[in-house]
Length: 244
Ligand SMILES: Nc1nonc1C(=O)N1CCN(Cc2ccccn2)CC1
Image (tube, rainbow, N blue to C red; front, side, top):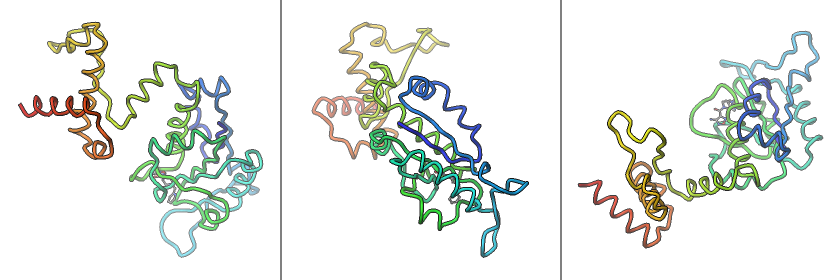
């Protein structure tokens, strides 16, 4: 997976060199190249923003430096589609992450200021994606969210047990509660079943908790998910005990 990112703040992507994404980069399962429009300016102040036609607050990313950086990235990654991070984009989710993880690469365009010139979107952007309905200071964090979610899905990046956990977590349910030492914390005990060593009972307890939590917190997810007979029974059991 080749990630190319057009950004005015390449330093932010040092964070991608840590943890799971850092290991994926170190082992060559992913690569990251940054393209800074400021390197494509030709004035002494290295200007990268300009005033919007029509007036109004804020600045827009200047066309020429951005276009030059984007063209270089496209030349270096000819097969990669250009993704523009913007609140106006389609909502990114796990299904989108899975689809993107199957690609050879992507060029992520991280905008700052009030955005980019619409003619650049028309000529050079293939897809617009949003990570949620809130306004960030730029597209860099959104780009890193997508890079992280996609990288975790690349073959060999997560260990087998992690990817199994990832699958269980994302099988359309919220995660079950997690516990670790000590087994008693200020009078609060770890559920006995988790200390029992009975893996069948532990699995059943975890599935019931995942179903129950999803019912309580994200009933919308349950509506999209077929339940097996056992899952239906476990959920009904959870609801009965929850309602007392
Ligand atoms: N939410 C999000 N999910 O992806 N990106 C965001 C996000 O908030 N931002 C902040 C504004 N930036 C610049 C901008 C401003 C206006 C129009 C287009 N671009 C883009 C990235």
